[in-house]
Image 1: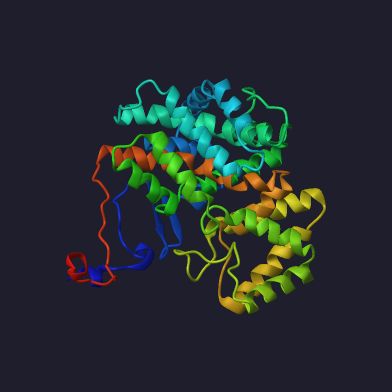
Image 2: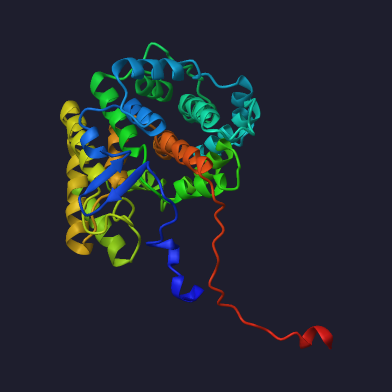
Length: 375
């Protein structure tokens, strides 16, 4: 078979790796995470349960989860020099670029950076899981001339993340919904950013380098940046009727509408989006204002009717984050922070059974003669 016959644009349908971490079973409508259905786990599990599952291959006991949380709390702080770096960045630096810079800088503080063993990689994963929320929250704060908020170790992992972003302790509902969003974003088989991390890791580059590349990948609005785009679109419209009109105009102009469609979920709704839709309803009911919920439902109806496209996670995560009072500019960094555990687990797996990624191309250029060089 020729290279031409093997070519698949965007590597669509190409199997690039074997993994024990996750699988999108579109036939059974399950997101399999280390053997468990993520959607069923979302009903009763917390983000740290998924962390332990992905890094240690088991759902933790209450004692194991407490140990994990305490381990992360010991690593919450980031070097003060990294905060100084954020102050040197241009004011208009995108939060994802600040995040990328912060993760890259952390590598300089790693004592055994060249150790690729599973044990060493897992220890780095715990450090990153502890520090990335701090980098996300406080790089944004520094760039926006706000006071740095130090971690509060009296709070849970997710509550502390929320606290560093907003400066306030979340309510029970806010903490639950935010934690659930992190769980849903935690791992999703082989999207572009995960593939990027594994490609970088396959060169025997370190975990920090792999995640730095993954940040760059996730920044794009065809991947992680979609949640921000969704929220700006909702705010631009402002009402149910205007949102329907806005979507109709975009469709007529053949514009891509963020928050709808997915390379894997072709003909059905992303099951994670359904959970966030329910969370949005809870937050709206609690506030006594269901405008965003009604707008999103109306937009969903338009897109299904006109294009046969269904919402993905970003479509409902965006208004959920807005209702939680989170700055739109850091929706994608929050996504990355949640996905840190999945990315780390993939790098651990790649290093444990490595083969360098080195694909070929289908050359479509000319084959020129060399006479011009000899005349």
